[in-house]
Amino acid sequence: MAQLTNDCFAFSGPPIPLDDIVTLLGDRLVAVEGTETVSLSGADGRVLAADVNAPMSLPPFTNSAVDGYAVRHGDLSPDQENVFSVAGRVQAGQTLDVGLSPAEAIRIFTGAAMPAGADTVYMQEDTRIDGMGRVVLPMGLKQGANVRPVGEDITNGKSVLGAGHRMRPQDVAVLGALGFTQAVVRRRVRVGVLSTGNEIVEPGEVRAATQLFDSNRLMLKAMLGRLGCEVTDLGLLRDDPAAIAAALKAAAASLDLILTSGGVSTGEADYVRDAVETVGTLVFWRVAIKPGRPVAMGVIEGIPFIGLPGNPAASFVTFVTIVRPALQLLGGTPAQMPIPIPAQATFSYSKKAGRREYVRANLTRHKDGTLAVAKFRREGAGLLSSLIETDGFVVLGEDILSVEPGQTVKFMPYSSLF
Ligand code: AMP
Ligand code: MG
Image 1: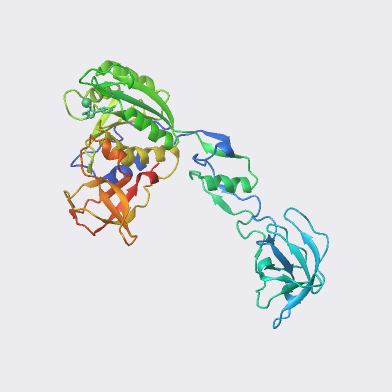
Image 2: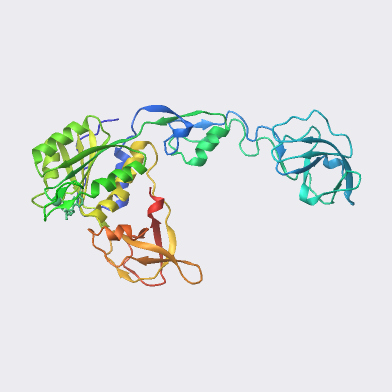
């Protein structure tokens, strides 16, 4: 990927609104180079590297949308029931050689090609068979009813999916329906994740009374995995700037982004900061969001570095708001947040102007079925329970000062983010 200049993330002044950060990322980060060809079975979640145009029409031939009887509409007398003899039968996948003579119907099934001359299909539920085996057709059916014309879904040559589109199951299905077996996608974004801290130990290892098991690295790796990244676990390092610096420098050689959690605020024991400064450059962003303390952003050997705060909820929110757009840009897709759901607050809350808050909350329903949103009972940035007991954020914009019960707020489910 393109090498970044050391000062590319420099930003000074008061806390930076999140939108400005995302704009800066959009200006600076370039999608990884390199594509690969993957089979459609493995294409879900991958980012298309080129536009796809339809090499054929869908449906490829005009066919029946229902089980019933195919007729020529012009044969029907408009002001009475019609009784037609059944001249043939065509099932899905078959070709019928018999043509349609006047006042004849063809027994047809869903997906079968329309017989030559037929242009309209009666649903079998609307017909009956008389004593002589003829089909009785009611009045009033429009020409072309229950017929799926060639190309009504997708016309040959149409642009179906664009470069930069992250494929979903239905996109993979369309490519298969168009006869493709493979897709050309961007390579996965390679991200390394490092934990630091003398107080942090690996789950399963011996924990001293004053230590915590590492939870952030597991969370970050899982989120990266869901966003389609190739994750490298850079492990857990002691608060030793030389060791951290060496690890970061080595990692930069093969990665597109380096993430750390903890050790990047302005305290004395924040060694990641010192380490980054010896092998690259570092800027602090005072991001105008809560939770989320300063986020460190830097460049190591031309590769972006993002240092997230150690508190789990702050780490989670800054990942979602800063790392996620960065990954989208590196991956070759536009940086986009999901559209939040409007719901009525069941709580009151007050906040400072000028910063955006991500209030952990649950979506529920009022008795009348309308959507309501309930705030988690506590707000600490260190509370893992606040993440597991909620299913999304209420996003309170910079201009909002308070929320009262009944007010419409924007709710962003976690499930829309990963
Ligand atoms: P820091 O950002 O380093 O000041 O850390 C803030 C808080 O997050 C402290 O209570 C740390 O112990 C905690 N913390 C830092 N790293 C991790 C981690 N990997 N897993 C869980 N908690 C962490
Ligand atoms: Mg620390």
